[in-house]
Length: 234
Ligand SMILES: N[C@@H](CCC(=O)N[C@@H](CS)C(=O)NCC(=O)O)C(=O)O
Image (cartoon, rainbow, N blue to C red; front, side, top):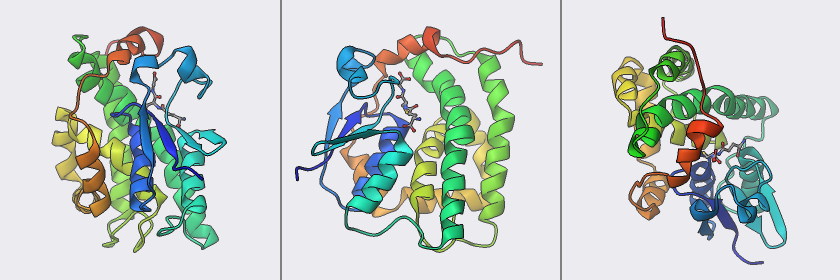
């Protein structure tokens, strides 16, 4: 069967989760940049909810990152990133759901968009959106800190799993914001985990493949289509 194709745009957090997993398993794949057609018919034919990533493998196409991640982990050889133990697997899925529900929305959708993505397009940050997210991010970091406080290397203990690769891209983008830089040193076990993850051969290899960070052109749409709105920060 032909090599899988990942569809997305290069700076997408979720796309990079999939690319990390493929890279870690040493699966040859190609990347198809959808940036010029995001939201257009060509994109919506692949992903009816107007998001990325999408994976195509032969005649099989699948979207939603958790579905893609499980498919890649099961369909290809290379180190398994899913624990065999049923409770550890439940714990891994708990982390993945937490990334989808709390870490990604507040670190990326709120702070990273307001501090990086919109200003790069000349759109001013909305301070209310940032202010709303910060306490929630602190809660998230405290949860990771507690889990890692007994010297574990990875979120589930000694073994690297899909949970670590789900967490990495959100925590990377948030590290590029002033709020991330101010907050992270208060969570030393989390910082050690981040250093370990950022220095994995997998992470280095993917980062070396990515193009230089450039503004996300289609994100101009987000300012009206799906930007969070909150009242004045107290
Ligand atoms: N539930 C989706 C979320 C994917 C998602 O939000 N992707 C973002 C990029 S990180 C996206 O497609 N944004 C494009 C847009 O909002 O126009 C998944 O798990 O794959």
